[in-house]
Amino acid sequence: MSLNNLGLNKKTLVKNHKIAFDQDKMWLDINHELSKKKKKPRLILFFTCILFTSFSSIFISQYQSHKYKSQGLSKHSIDNLPNTPSAKSSTILDVCPENELLVISATPSAKMIEKHISANVLESFNTPNNISNQSVTIDEKFDSTHYTNTSTNQTLTEPLPKLELSAKSFFKVLLILGEVYLYPVEEKISISCPITID
Amino acid sequence: MRQHQDKDEADIIKGCINEISQFQYELFMRYSESLFATCVRYVGCQDQAKDVLQESFLAIFKYIQNYNADKGSLFTWMNKICINKSLKHIKSSYTVIDYGEEDHSSIADANPSAMELLEANELFNEIIKLPEPYRTVFNLYEIEGFSHLEIANLLKIQEVSSRSILSRAKKLLIAHLQNLQFKGA
Image (cartoon, rainbow over all chains, first blue to last red; front, side, top):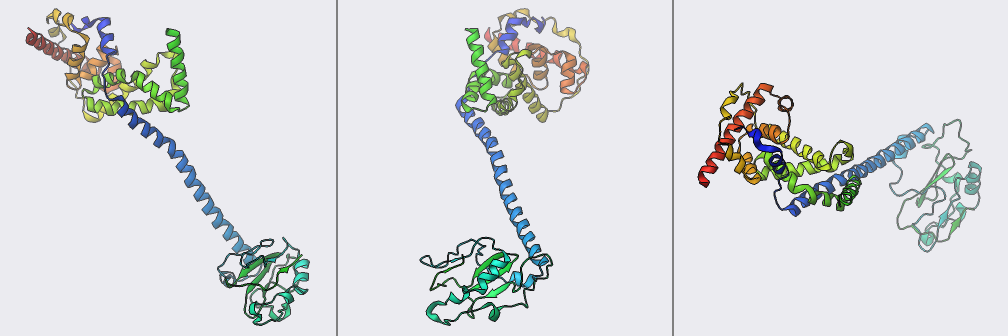
């Protein structure tokens, strides 16, 4: 005898043989594996976004640092800026209760800033409890030793760029190429009268 | 009826390509028992066959967009995947030895009635009892219809070894069957 005598019918029967088993249990395992594979691309996307955001912020901070340096600001002075949230122009500082706000118009030109500062703005900036009750003018507190702008193409005219508004340093104002940065020095600061620069 | 089933199958394939779980489940439930039998027939052990089947279905769902209905039925395509996965599993577990040439004439005079009386179930059970590599070569040659050259290429052995292994597999199988018949009597 040869097993070639198996015959087509028997071969087919063997080929189409079925064995029962716990299909639901295996399906759970397969489904689990499939869902893991589906999640992978989402995870990869998530981590890519995180990486992108991190690198972007690093790049931006490096760029800004480079920009400041190119304007003649020393690294020391930049690093020593108060480590509190900075407010760019047009940002409303959220340090003052009851809408006693300091608002500075967006991207003011150098002339505007100069005008605003040299006008009555600072004079109306009173300190709480009238500690000093004094007006601080640019000329009094202008500090040109740290922030001498050496850039030749910037449009700001003197005075530049750092202004301490009072002897108590409630705010530091840094002017860089027409952008106004406000650094609240003390969290508890309150401003007795609203100041608006229009 | 046939057309209805085909249409269903086409929908299932489409659903699986779109990774819709419901269709994947339908495909699994429809074919898993048959494919499990294929895996058992090659691997010889149900526990290991389950692992192979699971791996096979993951491959099926991954590559189902490559299935071409013009080249054969879906079951045949899936069965091939199961066979390949089983062979991969077997290769990782065993070393195929070169068996040299065998005298084929010795298997010609076994009792012919043994095969005639054998039910497909019994034959299946005897096949899975064959040790490696007899089971693999027997399955590939006798059940799937591969040539010795194809088997040799697949298992990375010589063609003559494939013949020899098959010959020994048949001897073993016949001995098992005779034993079965003897017990039955």
